[in-house]
Length: 82
Image (tube, rainbow, N blue to C red; front, side, top):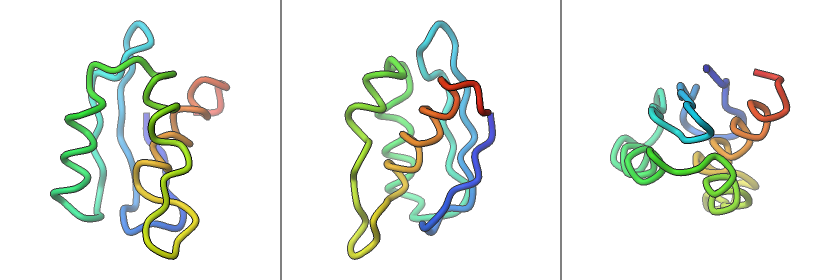
């Protein structure tokens, strides 16, 4: 799946889900070390757990963040919008 991010430095998130588990997550753009860290931490995690942990995280003054955008992408995936 591909998700175009909004309000963050990364431009896009590519992810794959199998059996309700994240098996691949890659951010395009953004802070390389942080986005790689988030990706490695959530790979293998249940989609609902990832949403619960990441939703609502802010980046500085911004009302969202790359982890929050991943949570949004996963919610849209669950709702069949991606």
